Length: 95
Image (cartoon, rainbow, N blue to C red):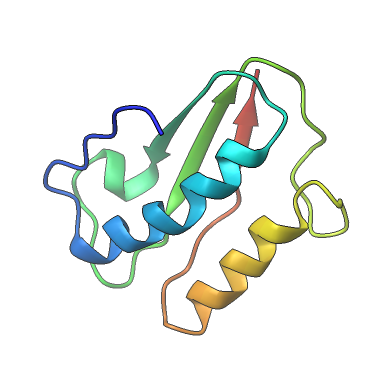
């Protein structure tokens, strides 16, 4: 894993990031960067906010959807966090 700066992000987000980064590392995407959008990016996050990931990657990937074998594991992660009351919104993926 490369350098990750979590700064002043909410503690639950540290756990979510630790959960999704290994999945992103296993994608055949080449170099990648992960960003956060929505209320987190505006520092307006609260306990009702969802988490909006932005995945920027070198190599093309299929569109994120639950039916894709490439993304199936990601949606398992999404469902697992939903059971804990944490909503991961759709993933915005760009080359």
